[in-house]
Image 1: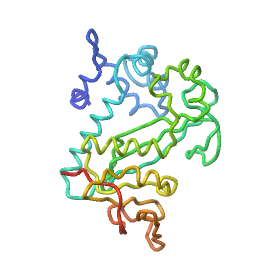
Image 2: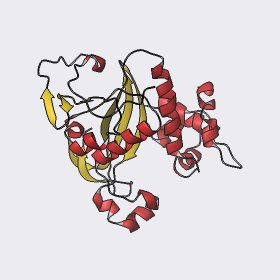
Image 3: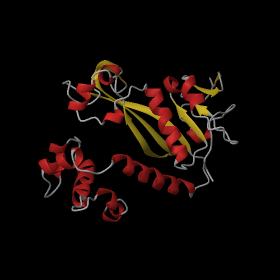
Image 4: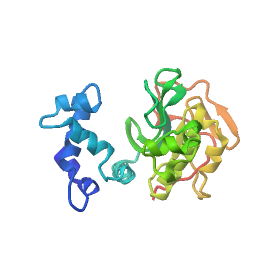
Length: 254
């Protein structure tokens, strides 16, 4: 783990301090603790301190977006070594919450529980290749009841430039375009029907490249404004084996 952390060490430094020891403790906690909260992680990690780790994750001056860009770049480099096609998957996850203070918490649909409940929702994009996957982008969804209440957002510590309402599909679009701008290589974009049926997402991610990639959903393949079902597709087939009909989007693989 030490060699891995060295790759990211410069992203966890300020002019007067380094947080590499906290990075090590935090990562060990994620692997060693069944319940991944700071309190339970500290119970498993030697010499860790709950207050110090809480400060590291919430208040230390390191930039999460820079870390994710490095993760994306490293994942891309690993996948480029193989001949198998690489795709970009969009998905979301929800976390049930009890209170009202957590950023973005509201009564909304949570995929983890399959119903509307009080909680947070995050949107994620991942590079996938065969049975390998790596998350390269994350966005926390802010419902309108949050972005319409700037005082609440400021009290929760949300930066001013982030207090903007965007749908979950718009967050996915932003991350696809960001991956393209960073030169991440992928030959198709996929997601479930919620994302695949959103025409703004499909057309909003077209960079007018001469190379196009299909948008594959869990039930169909989107072809521009049309959707073609694949009724006989086996559920246990790998994504790379799916038959793609038509295309949209772009490919930044060099």
